[in-house]
Length: 554
Image (cartoon, rainbow, N blue to C red; front, side, top):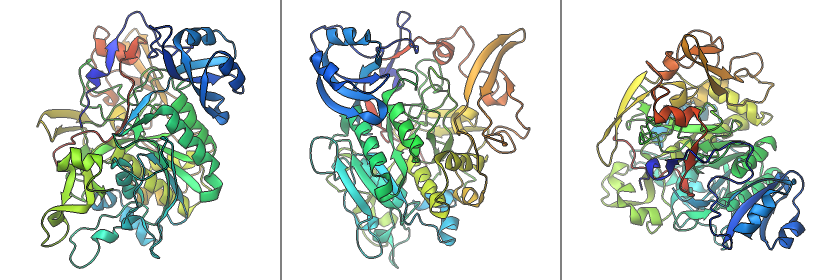
């Protein structure tokens, strides 16, 4: 299930990525007669008639976004890009599918003791579907999956791949299939009474289209009031090809955020990759590069409820984001070796990767063999629903909270407990990787659901993740954070995430935010140019469900 970023990225000195271009750098127009599935963004309302006049087949119109998914010949795309009403054209990128300890580590059990379980809050899961499972029922035996829809051309919205059900269990599983006298562990999700909205965008092989994801986001907005959808979980992403201001998927998640829905997104699983000299930095996936959303990195709990031995998961992607250089992830949560609901023993993940199957004996006394109910996966895909569940808990307590206020509370109360320097081993190869708890690795810190529940701050500004800029001075390079204040408080509370002094707005290049030095080297290295330059082009169109990693050893 591993996928190296080395296979996705190449440098080009002739292709520049910047906001002035109308055609995405990964759109292949070499064959002028070849039909292409593209997403066209307009500066005003979509002109479907115009697209048809060009010979296009219109598949979806996203009226909220002034955007359409359409099939067009390559030579027509060139013509269309000269239209002043056309803002940007990008490929309809392919999508591929990629608790007990987790909940205790982030203090969810303390939240439950106050009676908050996510009851009445709707969480939309845009993934490979959700299969009917007892752990997703209410006390009356009725399913809490209150709405299901498929966007992949079939009516069946259940989960043949195995990813979406696992994610849904981390958010809202009630542990009924692991509760009782014979069980030694109960696998309960973060918000065990929340309602789930199942929006399937990936097939049995974990594949789909970006336009499917966009259509599902639009449906979540349409159904917001009907099912009280307050949180949207996206445990998937694709490489960054353009600024978030032009990325159609980023624009879609922003529309949900501005409609009052908290959007929680996986950071990516490329933190181990040093093939380009970045030591895993600059590998945040889209739409996690959008400054509005909550982007989540993964930690390794080492299989214990205590946080004393926890570390960052070595595969967790690091910021800053390419092109826009946004500080990401926003925070981190448990994502390594997370046990949650198994869709079916015949789902693709279980069959293709049998080591993910949980043995009955790990949680039920005296039973041999693989469990028919639970599966163990690793990745930022698994950390993301932990934060989505925490958001549902906050919104049950205070339904008036805006997405910006939820984000601010989660970030401000995040714990700064991870060691400055950590190591971890790939569970598959045994390779050793080093990490540090800097701003681009752990963000604001480690999720603490109970501390967030107790916080009463109400930010009055948009809670945009800050950007970083690099300037050269007589004393060397200087790194500065921008957009760090959300009202009266510094974005991460009373102290820096990497120290104890109040942040004054400027950091030297030798500050601990970078470690002992700029981690990707100096201006002569390729890694440096990738982070701070504008000539990075990704060579693969796939969008992965971000659990496709072997995980770290526990």
